Amino acid sequence: MKKYDVFVIGSGMAGMTVANKCASSGLKVGVTDELPFGGTCALRGCDPKKVIIGATEVRDFAMRLKGKGIDTIPDVNWQDVMVFKQSFVDAMPPKIEKGYKHSGIDTYHTSARFLSKNTLMVGTDTVQADKIVIATGSKPRVLDFEGGNLALSSTDFLNLKELPQSLLFIGGGYIAFEFAHIAARFGANVTIVHRGKRPLENFEQDIVNHLIDATKELGIKLVLETEVSKIRKEDNNFLVTGISKGKEITYQTEAVFNSAGRPPVIFDLDLEKANIPFSKKGITVNEYLQSTSNPNVYVGGDAADSRGLPLTPVAVMEGHIVASNIIKGNSKKVNYPPMPSVVFTLPTMAAVGLTEVEAKTQKIDYQVNYNKVGNWFNAERLNVKEYAFKTIIDRKNQSILGAHLIGPNAEETINLFALAIKTKMEVNELRTMIFTYPTLSSDIPHML
Image 1: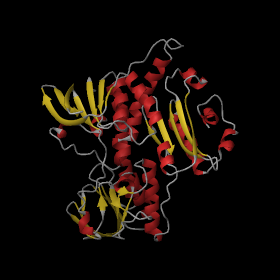
Image 2: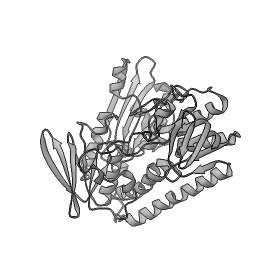
Image 3: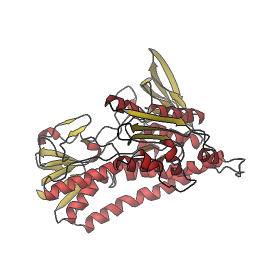
Image 4: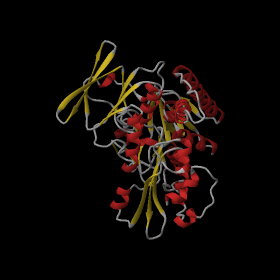
């Protein structure tokens, strides 16, 4: 039996943070991951996705300025982009493994499951640890209808050698929209099928409406209130059957992708043997990110049923809190700052803080500023159709409760709103700031 002070299951950003921080404090640490070290973000998510989006941004910008100084719209080459993307992905696992070895961390490349409160079966090894950290992340939801196994995953999309001429995405969340926009800009015929009345349900719907318009303008077919019930293969195509208002509708496509959500990867860990309570949302934790029933176990990232959004920076923050509580004893409670999130479509949609519905539910006395501002200079110089904002302000103390944007540079501008919310900056202070001009951030005072 191998013994450790700390053993980490998962080597994404949360697990990596815990392992490195604990090792640097002199603790004996082991880490395992059944997938290559690096986690979803670096290998199968945000990083490779953003590399691919770069090519579509260039093409989109050129198309908007065609006839306004740009004569030729550049072609995009899927194979070349994928080679460029892969250069980032391939470099990550060996770099992480080298760092672990340098820090004296033992590495395993296999699955793990609990045998008791502080004992694991890691591959064929029995491992005992004073503290066990679960940072296993999330994975695509299983589609439990006929032919559900025929749908490809987001990982598969990011590894396509060639882009199919037609693609269908099941689900109306950010993954479906981001990948649909990428595929459409590479020339594919794209359909999104979503079972709900509204896509991107967690975002401010007034702003989502603008993204829906931009998505349709791009030629993407958006099908709502339709639940996919069957997928079957026919020659070189797939037939996807959906039920809408009691009627069956069938769509033909070259490839089907499962973008119907990502549950936590915790259900094969034999958590019951370690007295670890959990739900479909994740493992139940206290304010120290510690299992509520097993003090030997801490949880970080998407595996935890916490108030943290499933975002990489949140996983890193949780990793630091878990490591600190292991090293020093439970001294650091989790306290989430404003968590900005982005849908990396073109136009980009970004949000931080409360939606109007949330502000109303909390019975806050608030005011709303909402406007479509395609006539502002920044929109006109970039020739963008969709540029809009919605800010929610606390009437009593004149601070910002929430900000919701769509348009150029929204992914950067939203960070300034997050800073204003975190520091409880009054609206008038933000209005009277001097911003560099003409930048997208210089529009902030006019959004208040």
